[in-house]
Length: 72
Image (cartoon, rainbow, N blue to C red; front, side, top):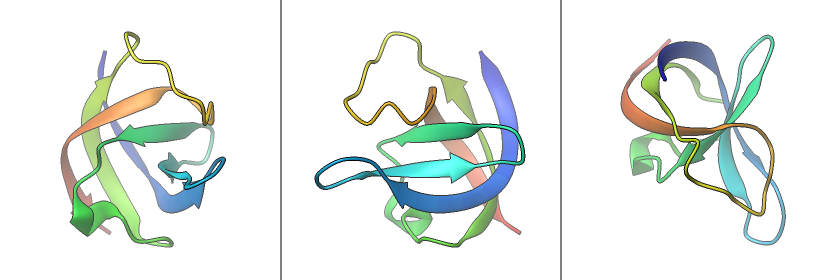
């Protein structure tokens, strides 16, 4: 499923953690986010695809594969 989500980047999870996009109503775990997106507190709009074929240990929300993004 393709979607556009606006929110804030946060570091979450166990061990070394994972990058997440926190919107007003949902949190998405980012799958292999580009280095420019790996900054806590960054406000962004991300376009991507929810990957239902991937499971992770962090379990912070659906896995979102980033296709493009803009800073807000």
